[in-house]
Image 1 (cartoon, rainbow, N blue to C red):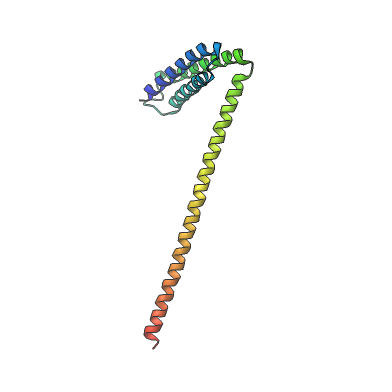
Image 2: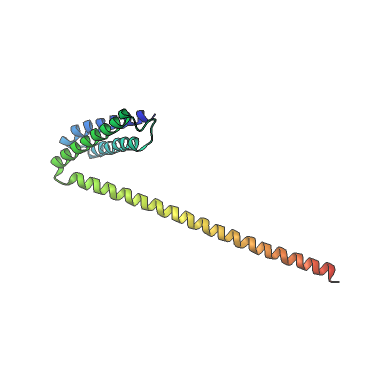
Length: 155
C-alpha cells in the first residue's frame, strides 16, 4: 500500500508538471494553474510521507535507493517549476508562493493548536466543576447523616 501511495505521489507530480508546463505559457486560466501547483505540492508531500513512514524493510538498499531517487526526482520537478514560473511571472514569484503557503500552513497549525488549548481549558473547567459538585454533595451527605444521627439518638 505504501508503494502505491508513493507511485501515486510520483504520478501526481508528473501530471502537475505537465499541466503547469502547458498552462504557464498562456496563463489564461489562473485557477487551473493554481490547481496544478497544488497537485504538485500534494504529490511531493505524498513522496515525502512515504520516505518518513516505516515500510517493510527500511534498511534494504532497494528501499533506500527508491526513496532517495523518488525524492530527488520530485525535487527536480519542483525546481523546474520554480524556474518556469519565475521566468513567466518574474523573479521571486515561486519564492512568494512558497512563503505564502508556509505562512498559511503555520497559521492553520496555530488555529488548530488554539482550538486544542481551548478544548483542554474547557475540559479542565468541567472537571473542576464536577469536583466541586462532588465535594458539595459529599458535605451535604455528611451533614444529612450527622443530622439524622442527632435526631435519632439525640432525643
